Image (cartoon, rainbow, N blue to C red; front, side, top):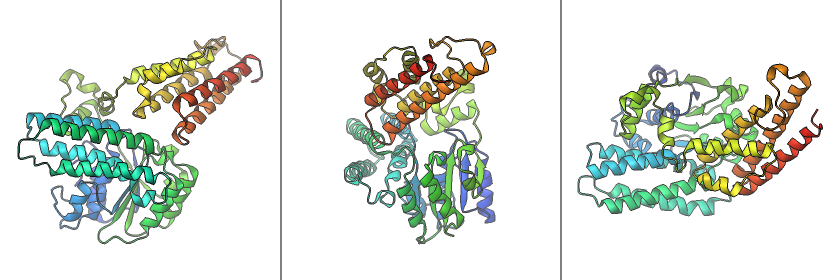
Length: 432
Protein backbone atom coordinates (compact mmCIF):
# COMPACT_ATOMS: atom_id res chain seq x y z
CA UNK A 1 0.00 0.00 0.00
CA UNK A 2 1.01 3.62 -0.65
CA UNK A 3 3.40 2.59 -3.45
CA UNK A 4 2.26 5.63 -5.44
CA UNK A 5 3.40 8.03 -2.70
CA UNK A 6 7.07 8.67 -3.38
CA UNK A 7 9.73 9.80 -0.93
CA UNK A 8 7.44 10.42 2.04
CA UNK A 9 8.06 8.59 5.36
CA UNK A 10 4.47 9.40 6.37
CA UNK A 11 3.33 6.50 4.18
CA UNK A 12 5.22 4.02 6.36
CA UNK A 13 3.68 5.46 9.52
CA UNK A 14 0.17 5.24 8.01
CA UNK A 15 0.69 1.68 6.80
CA UNK A 16 1.87 0.64 10.27
CA UNK A 17 -1.15 2.29 11.93
CA UNK A 18 -3.52 0.48 9.53
CA UNK A 19 -1.92 -2.92 10.13
CA UNK A 20 -1.93 -2.41 13.90
CA UNK A 21 -5.54 -1.19 13.93
CA UNK A 22 -4.50 2.09 15.53
CA UNK A 23 -5.53 4.50 12.78
CA UNK A 24 -7.64 7.33 14.27
CA UNK A 25 -10.90 8.64 12.82
CA UNK A 26 -9.42 12.08 12.15
CA UNK A 27 -6.06 12.80 10.55
CA UNK A 28 -4.23 15.97 9.56
CA UNK A 29 -1.72 15.83 6.71
CA UNK A 30 0.73 18.73 7.10
CA UNK A 31 3.32 19.66 4.52
CA UNK A 32 4.38 21.98 1.71
CA UNK A 33 2.57 22.16 -1.64
CA UNK A 34 3.16 19.23 -4.01
CA UNK A 35 4.40 16.98 -1.21
CA UNK A 36 1.84 14.22 -1.90
CA UNK A 37 -0.82 14.98 0.72
CA UNK A 38 -3.80 14.50 -1.62
CA UNK A 39 -2.21 11.45 -3.28
CA UNK A 40 -1.82 9.90 0.16
CA UNK A 41 -5.38 10.79 1.24
CA UNK A 42 -6.87 9.18 -1.88
CA UNK A 43 -4.74 6.07 -1.48
CA UNK A 44 -5.75 5.84 2.19
CA UNK A 45 -9.41 5.95 1.12
CA UNK A 46 -8.78 3.07 -1.31
CA UNK A 47 -7.01 0.94 1.28
CA UNK A 48 -9.69 1.47 3.94
CA UNK A 49 -12.48 0.50 1.53
CA UNK A 50 -10.68 -2.51 0.02
CA UNK A 51 -12.66 -5.76 0.28
CA UNK A 52 -9.81 -8.14 -0.58
CA UNK A 53 -7.48 -10.11 1.68
CA UNK A 54 -4.83 -8.98 2.36
CA UNK A 55 -6.28 -5.49 2.26
CA UNK A 56 -4.79 -2.64 0.26
CA UNK A 57 -2.46 -4.46 -2.16
CA UNK A 58 -1.43 -2.00 -4.90
CA UNK A 59 -2.44 -4.43 -7.66
CA UNK A 60 -5.78 -5.27 -6.02
CA UNK A 61 -8.59 -5.61 -8.55
CA UNK A 62 -11.56 -5.81 -6.18
CA UNK A 63 -14.54 -3.72 -7.27
CA UNK A 64 -13.95 -1.17 -4.50
CA UNK A 65 -10.27 -0.61 -5.39
CA UNK A 66 -11.05 -0.22 -9.09
CA UNK A 67 -13.62 2.46 -8.31
CA UNK A 68 -11.25 4.28 -5.97
CA UNK A 69 -8.44 4.22 -8.52
CA UNK A 70 -10.79 5.83 -11.03
CA UNK A 71 -12.05 8.26 -8.34
CA UNK A 72 -15.69 7.24 -8.82
CA UNK A 73 -16.23 5.50 -5.48
CA UNK A 74 -19.32 6.47 -3.50
CA UNK A 75 -17.40 5.93 -0.25
CA UNK A 76 -15.15 8.94 -0.92
CA UNK A 77 -16.06 12.59 -0.50
CA UNK A 78 -13.55 15.25 -1.59
CA UNK A 79 -13.95 18.95 -0.78
CA UNK A 80 -11.78 22.03 -0.59
CA UNK A 81 -10.16 24.48 -2.96
CA UNK A 82 -7.33 23.30 -5.21
CA UNK A 83 -5.74 24.46 -8.45
CA UNK A 84 -6.26 21.41 -10.69
CA UNK A 85 -5.83 22.91 -14.16
CA UNK A 86 -2.04 22.72 -14.41
CA UNK A 87 -1.93 19.05 -13.42
CA UNK A 88 -4.64 18.38 -16.02
CA UNK A 89 -2.68 20.19 -18.76
CA UNK A 90 0.57 18.44 -17.80
CA UNK A 91 -1.17 15.05 -17.74
CA UNK A 92 -2.79 15.73 -21.12
CA UNK A 93 0.63 16.48 -22.62
CA UNK A 94 2.09 13.30 -21.13
CA UNK A 95 -0.81 11.20 -22.47
CA UNK A 96 -0.72 12.60 -26.01
CA UNK A 97 3.05 12.23 -26.23
CA UNK A 98 2.71 8.61 -25.12
CA UNK A 99 0.06 8.03 -27.80
CA UNK A 100 2.16 9.63 -30.54
CA UNK A 101 5.17 7.46 -29.68
CA UNK A 102 3.16 4.34 -28.75
CA UNK A 103 5.06 4.32 -25.45
CA UNK A 104 5.08 1.25 -23.24
CA UNK A 105 3.53 3.31 -20.44
CA UNK A 106 0.57 4.49 -22.57
CA UNK A 107 -2.10 2.97 -20.32
CA UNK A 108 -0.56 4.57 -17.24
CA UNK A 109 -0.66 8.01 -18.89
CA UNK A 110 -4.33 7.66 -19.81
CA UNK A 111 -5.02 6.71 -16.20
CA UNK A 112 -3.00 9.76 -15.08
CA UNK A 113 -5.00 12.10 -17.32
CA UNK A 114 -8.42 10.71 -16.40
CA UNK A 115 -7.57 10.78 -12.71
CA UNK A 116 -6.32 14.40 -12.90
CA UNK A 117 -9.72 15.48 -14.22
CA UNK A 118 -11.64 13.49 -11.64
CA UNK A 119 -9.63 15.11 -8.86
CA UNK A 120 -11.52 18.21 -9.99
CA UNK A 121 -14.97 16.79 -10.76
CA UNK A 122 -15.07 14.83 -7.48
CA UNK A 123 -15.40 18.18 -5.69
CA UNK A 124 -18.77 18.70 -7.36
CA UNK A 125 -20.46 15.63 -5.92
CA UNK A 126 -24.27 15.89 -5.62
CA UNK A 127 -23.78 15.11 -1.92
CA UNK A 128 -22.11 18.51 -1.52
CA UNK A 129 -23.97 20.56 -4.11
CA UNK A 130 -27.58 19.44 -3.67
CA UNK A 131 -29.84 22.49 -3.55
CA UNK A 132 -27.11 24.96 -4.61
CA UNK A 133 -28.19 27.75 -6.95
CA UNK A 134 -25.34 26.94 -9.34
CA UNK A 135 -26.36 23.32 -9.93
CA UNK A 136 -28.43 24.13 -13.02
CA UNK A 137 -25.37 25.65 -14.71
CA UNK A 138 -22.94 23.16 -13.25
CA UNK A 139 -24.75 19.94 -14.18
CA UNK A 140 -24.51 20.22 -18.01
CA UNK A 141 -20.76 20.87 -17.80
CA UNK A 142 -20.19 17.86 -15.53
CA UNK A 143 -22.35 15.72 -17.81
CA UNK A 144 -20.27 16.72 -20.84
CA UNK A 145 -17.02 15.92 -19.02
CA UNK A 146 -18.36 12.48 -18.02
CA UNK A 147 -19.40 11.76 -21.62
CA UNK A 148 -15.97 12.73 -22.95
CA UNK A 149 -14.24 10.61 -20.29
CA UNK A 150 -16.42 7.62 -21.19
CA UNK A 151 -15.54 8.12 -24.86
CA UNK A 152 -11.85 8.33 -23.97
CA UNK A 153 -12.01 5.13 -21.94
CA UNK A 154 -13.74 3.29 -24.80
CA UNK A 155 -10.62 3.73 -26.92
CA UNK A 156 -8.71 0.47 -27.20
CA UNK A 157 -5.06 1.12 -26.53
CA UNK A 158 -4.19 -2.15 -28.27
CA UNK A 159 -4.96 -0.78 -31.71
CA UNK A 160 -3.75 2.13 -33.78
CA UNK A 161 -5.32 5.36 -32.53
CA UNK A 162 -6.56 8.34 -34.52
CA UNK A 163 -4.22 10.92 -33.00
CA UNK A 164 -6.06 13.92 -34.46
CA UNK A 165 -9.40 12.73 -33.04
CA UNK A 166 -7.80 11.94 -29.71
CA UNK A 167 -6.13 15.37 -29.53
CA UNK A 168 -9.51 17.02 -30.16
CA UNK A 169 -11.13 14.97 -27.41
CA UNK A 170 -8.37 15.77 -24.93
CA UNK A 171 -8.51 19.46 -25.85
CA UNK A 172 -12.27 19.53 -25.15
CA UNK A 173 -11.75 17.87 -21.77
CA UNK A 174 -8.98 20.29 -20.80
CA UNK A 175 -11.11 23.27 -21.85
CA UNK A 176 -14.21 22.10 -19.97
CA UNK A 177 -12.19 21.31 -16.85
CA UNK A 178 -10.61 24.77 -16.95
CA UNK A 179 -14.04 26.42 -17.17
CA UNK A 180 -15.40 24.24 -14.37
CA UNK A 181 -12.58 25.25 -12.04
CA UNK A 182 -12.69 28.92 -13.01
CA UNK A 183 -16.45 29.37 -12.77
CA UNK A 184 -17.48 27.13 -9.89
CA UNK A 185 -14.56 26.28 -7.57
CA UNK A 186 -15.06 27.85 -4.15
CA UNK A 187 -12.10 29.50 -2.44
CA UNK A 188 -13.02 27.66 0.77
CA UNK A 189 -15.60 25.04 1.74
CA UNK A 190 -19.02 26.69 2.26
CA UNK A 191 -20.69 25.88 5.56
CA UNK A 192 -23.73 24.43 3.76
CA UNK A 193 -21.51 21.90 1.99
CA UNK A 194 -19.78 21.00 5.23
CA UNK A 195 -23.14 20.34 6.85
CA UNK A 196 -24.18 18.11 3.94
CA UNK A 197 -20.88 16.23 4.26
CA UNK A 198 -21.56 15.74 7.98
CA UNK A 199 -25.03 14.36 7.24
CA UNK A 200 -23.55 11.99 4.60
CA UNK A 201 -21.02 10.76 7.14
CA UNK A 202 -23.84 9.47 9.37
CA UNK A 203 -24.93 6.86 6.80
CA UNK A 204 -23.19 3.52 7.21
CA UNK A 205 -21.13 2.27 4.22
CA UNK A 206 -21.89 -1.06 2.56
CA UNK A 207 -18.38 -2.27 3.40
CA UNK A 208 -15.09 -0.90 4.64
CA UNK A 209 -14.86 2.72 5.68
CA UNK A 210 -15.94 6.01 4.13
CA UNK A 211 -13.40 8.81 3.86
CA UNK A 212 -13.98 12.56 3.78
CA UNK A 213 -11.01 14.55 2.49
CA UNK A 214 -10.99 18.27 3.31
CA UNK A 215 -8.17 20.03 1.46
CA UNK A 216 -6.67 23.29 2.71
CA UNK A 217 -8.46 23.04 6.04
CA UNK A 218 -6.71 26.23 7.18
CA UNK A 219 -8.75 28.23 4.64
CA UNK A 220 -12.18 27.26 6.01
CA UNK A 221 -14.42 30.06 7.23
CA UNK A 222 -15.69 30.13 10.80
CA UNK A 223 -19.01 28.45 10.05
CA UNK A 224 -17.34 25.56 8.21
CA UNK A 225 -14.72 25.18 10.93
CA UNK A 226 -17.44 24.93 13.57
CA UNK A 227 -19.32 22.33 11.50
CA UNK A 228 -16.12 20.25 11.21
CA UNK A 229 -15.42 20.62 14.90
CA UNK A 230 -18.92 19.47 15.79
CA UNK A 231 -18.65 16.16 13.91
CA UNK A 232 -15.06 15.56 15.03
CA UNK A 233 -16.22 15.69 18.63
CA UNK A 234 -18.16 12.45 18.02
CA UNK A 235 -17.02 11.07 14.64
CA UNK A 236 -19.02 8.14 13.18
CA UNK A 237 -17.21 4.85 13.67
CA UNK A 238 -17.09 3.95 9.97
CA UNK A 239 -15.84 7.32 8.69
CA UNK A 240 -12.28 8.67 8.55
CA UNK A 241 -11.69 12.40 8.14
CA UNK A 242 -8.50 13.53 6.41
CA UNK A 243 -7.71 17.24 6.61
CA UNK A 244 -4.77 18.68 4.69
CA UNK A 245 -2.91 21.94 5.18
CA UNK A 246 0.33 23.70 4.37
CA UNK A 247 0.00 25.84 7.53
CA UNK A 248 -0.62 23.85 10.69
CA UNK A 249 -0.68 26.96 12.88
CA UNK A 250 -3.57 28.37 10.82
CA UNK A 251 -5.83 25.45 11.72
CA UNK A 252 -8.20 26.13 14.62
CA UNK A 253 -6.65 24.85 17.90
CA UNK A 254 -9.80 22.97 18.89
CA UNK A 255 -9.66 21.08 15.58
CA UNK A 256 -5.94 20.39 16.05
CA UNK A 257 -6.70 18.79 19.40
CA UNK A 258 -9.00 16.27 17.69
CA UNK A 259 -6.78 15.10 14.82
CA UNK A 260 -3.56 13.10 14.62
CA UNK A 261 -0.94 14.93 12.54
CA UNK A 262 1.16 13.21 9.88
CA UNK A 263 4.03 15.32 8.62
CA UNK A 264 4.93 15.43 4.93
CA UNK A 265 8.51 16.56 4.49
CA UNK A 266 9.89 18.81 1.75
CA UNK A 267 11.36 16.52 -0.91
CA UNK A 268 14.91 17.10 -2.11
CA UNK A 269 15.44 18.44 -5.62
CA UNK A 270 16.61 15.04 -6.84
CA UNK A 271 13.57 13.36 -5.31
CA UNK A 272 11.25 15.84 -7.01
CA UNK A 273 13.08 15.25 -10.31
CA UNK A 274 12.34 11.53 -9.94
CA UNK A 275 8.66 12.24 -9.22
CA UNK A 276 8.45 14.38 -12.39
CA UNK A 277 10.12 11.59 -14.37
CA UNK A 278 8.04 8.72 -12.99
CA UNK A 279 4.67 10.51 -13.01
CA UNK A 280 4.86 12.80 -16.04
CA UNK A 281 7.64 10.96 -17.94
CA UNK A 282 9.47 14.25 -18.36
CA UNK A 283 13.21 14.19 -17.77
CA UNK A 284 15.03 16.84 -15.74
CA UNK A 285 18.56 17.42 -17.03
CA UNK A 286 21.13 16.09 -14.51
CA UNK A 287 22.69 19.50 -13.83
CA UNK A 288 19.25 20.88 -12.81
CA UNK A 289 18.19 17.99 -10.55
CA UNK A 290 19.32 19.61 -7.29
CA UNK A 291 16.97 22.53 -7.89
CA UNK A 292 14.09 20.55 -9.42
CA UNK A 293 10.60 21.46 -8.23
CA UNK A 294 7.25 19.81 -8.98
CA UNK A 295 5.55 23.18 -8.50
CA UNK A 296 7.89 24.87 -10.98
CA UNK A 297 7.34 22.04 -13.46
CA UNK A 298 3.56 22.42 -13.27
CA UNK A 299 3.79 26.22 -13.43
CA UNK A 300 5.73 25.89 -16.69
CA UNK A 301 2.35 25.06 -18.23
CA UNK A 302 0.90 28.44 -17.29
CA UNK A 303 0.05 30.61 -20.32
CA UNK A 304 1.96 33.50 -18.68
CA UNK A 305 5.20 33.19 -16.72
CA UNK A 306 4.81 33.48 -12.92
CA UNK A 307 7.60 36.07 -12.89
CA UNK A 308 5.65 38.32 -15.26
CA UNK A 309 2.50 38.08 -13.12
CA UNK A 310 4.40 38.73 -9.90
CA UNK A 311 6.12 41.74 -11.46
CA UNK A 312 2.74 43.12 -12.54
CA UNK A 313 1.43 42.75 -8.98
CA UNK A 314 4.32 44.64 -7.41
CA UNK A 315 4.17 47.36 -10.05
CA UNK A 316 0.42 47.79 -9.42
CA UNK A 317 1.07 48.60 -5.76
CA UNK A 318 4.06 50.81 -6.50
CA UNK A 319 2.10 52.87 -9.04
CA UNK A 320 -0.93 53.33 -6.80
CA UNK A 321 1.12 54.30 -3.74
CA UNK A 322 3.14 56.74 -5.84
CA UNK A 323 -0.06 58.48 -6.93
CA UNK A 324 -0.26 57.06 -10.44
CA UNK A 325 -3.22 55.29 -11.99
CA UNK A 326 -2.23 51.79 -13.16
CA UNK A 327 -3.29 50.52 -16.58
CA UNK A 328 -5.68 47.90 -15.27
CA UNK A 329 -6.85 46.77 -18.69
CA UNK A 330 -3.23 46.29 -19.72
CA UNK A 331 -2.47 44.39 -16.47
CA UNK A 332 -5.36 41.98 -17.04
CA UNK A 333 -4.18 41.40 -20.60
CA UNK A 334 -0.55 40.93 -19.53
CA UNK A 335 -1.66 38.38 -16.95
CA UNK A 336 -3.64 36.34 -19.48
CA UNK A 337 -7.01 37.36 -18.09
CA UNK A 338 -5.96 35.61 -14.85
CA UNK A 339 -6.89 32.21 -16.26
CA UNK A 340 -6.26 29.78 -14.73
CA UNK A 341 -7.03 31.32 -11.35
CA UNK A 342 -3.60 30.35 -10.06
CA UNK A 343 -2.39 33.46 -11.91
CA UNK A 344 -4.68 35.55 -9.73
CA UNK A 345 -3.21 33.91 -6.63
CA UNK A 346 0.32 34.77 -7.78
CA UNK A 347 -0.74 38.34 -8.56
CA UNK A 348 -2.26 38.89 -5.11
CA UNK A 349 0.70 37.23 -3.42
CA UNK A 350 3.02 39.71 -5.16
CA UNK A 351 0.84 42.66 -4.14
CA UNK A 352 0.85 41.40 -0.57
CA UNK A 353 4.65 41.26 -0.64
CA UNK A 354 4.83 44.83 -1.92
CA UNK A 355 2.56 45.96 0.91
CA UNK A 356 4.74 44.23 3.48
CA UNK A 357 7.67 46.25 2.09
CA UNK A 358 5.53 49.34 2.50
CA UNK A 359 4.82 48.53 6.14
CA UNK A 360 8.53 48.50 7.01
CA UNK A 361 9.39 51.86 5.52
CA UNK A 362 7.94 52.42 2.08
CA UNK A 363 11.24 51.74 0.34
CA UNK A 364 11.03 52.91 -3.25
CA UNK A 365 7.37 53.84 -2.97
CA UNK A 366 7.68 57.60 -2.91
CA UNK A 367 6.69 58.11 0.71
CA UNK A 368 9.84 59.76 1.98
CA UNK A 369 11.65 56.59 3.01
CA UNK A 370 13.96 56.79 5.98
CA UNK A 371 16.33 53.96 6.88
CA UNK A 372 14.95 51.57 9.49
CA UNK A 373 17.67 52.57 11.95
CA UNK A 374 16.72 56.24 11.71
CA UNK A 375 12.98 55.85 12.04
CA UNK A 376 11.43 56.98 15.27
CA UNK A 377 8.71 54.97 16.97
CA UNK A 378 5.89 57.19 15.65
CA UNK A 379 7.07 56.86 12.07
CA UNK A 380 7.32 53.10 12.36
CA UNK A 381 3.82 52.96 13.79
CA UNK A 382 2.44 55.12 11.00
CA UNK A 383 4.09 52.97 8.32
CA UNK A 384 2.79 49.77 9.93
CA UNK A 385 -0.73 51.20 10.13
CA UNK A 386 -0.54 52.35 6.52
CA UNK A 387 0.46 48.85 5.45
CA UNK A 388 -2.26 47.25 7.57
CA UNK A 389 -5.02 49.42 6.08
CA UNK A 390 -3.79 48.77 2.55
CA UNK A 391 -3.62 45.03 3.29
CA UNK A 392 -7.22 45.09 4.54
CA UNK A 393 -8.27 46.68 1.23
CA UNK A 394 -6.34 43.97 -0.62
CA UNK A 395 -8.09 41.18 1.30
CA UNK A 396 -11.47 42.78 0.63
CA UNK A 397 -10.67 42.99 -3.09
CA UNK A 398 -9.70 39.31 -3.17
CA UNK A 399 -12.93 38.39 -1.40
CA UNK A 400 -15.01 40.40 -3.88
CA UNK A 401 -13.46 38.42 -6.74
CA UNK A 402 -13.35 34.92 -5.29
CA UNK A 403 -16.47 34.91 -3.13
CA UNK A 404 -18.84 37.38 -4.79
CA UNK A 405 -17.63 36.90 -8.40
CA UNK A 406 -16.95 40.58 -9.03
CA UNK A 407 -15.15 41.25 -12.30
CA UNK A 408 -11.38 41.38 -11.82
CA UNK A 409 -10.89 44.70 -13.62
CA UNK A 410 -13.67 46.38 -11.62
CA UNK A 411 -12.30 44.96 -8.35
CA UNK A 412 -8.78 46.20 -9.12
CA UNK A 413 -10.08 49.69 -9.96
CA UNK A 414 -11.81 49.78 -6.58
CA UNK A 415 -8.65 48.52 -4.89
CA UNK A 416 -6.59 51.26 -6.52
CA UNK A 417 -9.06 53.87 -5.28
CA UNK A 418 -9.08 52.43 -1.75
CA UNK A 419 -5.28 52.34 -1.47
CA UNK A 420 -4.98 55.85 -2.93
CA UNK A 421 -7.35 57.12 -0.23
CA UNK A 422 -5.30 55.44 2.51
CA UNK A 423 -2.07 56.94 1.14
CA UNK A 424 -3.66 60.44 1.06
CA UNK A 425 -4.68 60.01 4.70
CA UNK A 426 -1.10 59.03 5.53
CA UNK A 427 0.43 62.00 3.71
CA UNK A 428 -2.09 64.33 5.32
CA UNK A 429 -1.11 63.14 8.78
CA UNK A 430 -4.47 61.48 9.46
CA UNK A 431 -2.79 58.13 10.14
CA UNK A 432 -1.02 58.82 13.44
